[in-house]
Length: 94
Image 1 (cartoon, rainbow, N blue to C red):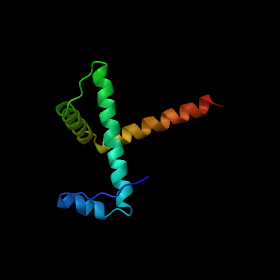
Image 2 (cartoon, rainbow, N blue to C red):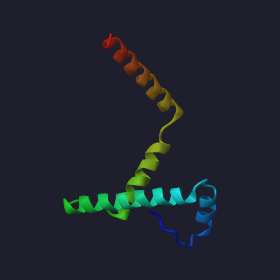
Image 3 (spheres, rainbow, N blue to C red):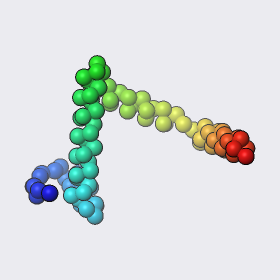
């Protein structure tokens, strides 16, 4: 069952939503993810973990710093290591 509602959005979000072929599905999926996150935070809170918006923002900032520190050289080294691991697995499975 579905229900039709009317909402107001900031211009930038309305413009982004207008790009979607199925705006209702996009909003529904976004809301489902939000609700799942809220449920996860509640479960973690009940077992003693307090997940705050500030803590999440701090971790996101740290992740961005780490991403920014990945140079093309490091990416190349990682690709080489991955190829070596995959080759070793292939040899081991023969």
